[in-house]
Image 1: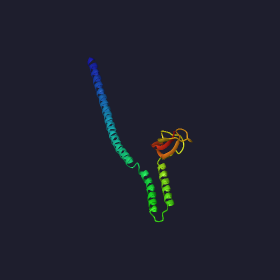
Image 2: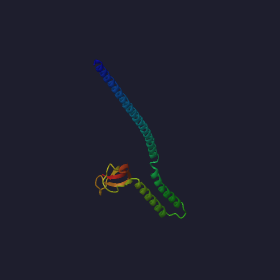
Image 3: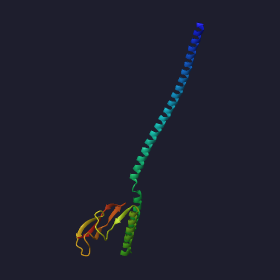
Image 4: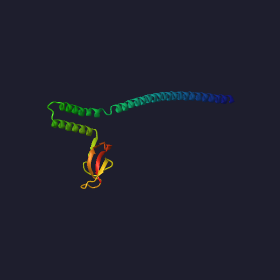
Length: 181
């Protein structure tokens, strides 16, 4: 009887070892599968990282090129618009050198050129500061001199020596004015 118990016990131990062995093989297979999946995921993530880095480098180069071109050609539209003014001046010079040129026609050409030039400036946000009347404003005006003017109040603008200009509401050049004392 003890031998039967001993056989049963040893069978149970063998079964437990076999069962444990089967379980550890399954665990190893599962771990191996998980490791392979983790390696695959790591490889995919590494490739994504490399692609992202390459994309960022390409984007940097494109942006640098765009900025370079923006600086290089920023005045392109303005320069093309000024060509109209140049053409108008050339036509005025040509008509002034004509034998039948009159002062009226010459003056008319200069006035037209001035209008084209002013409209070109306005197209690009450059506006005139021409304060023929009003109070002196140090933000927009520069007093060249002060004179006594009985019909004007103190700090009134008497005369404009040189008109000023603003670019998008920022003063490029203040208007030079004569101010009443």
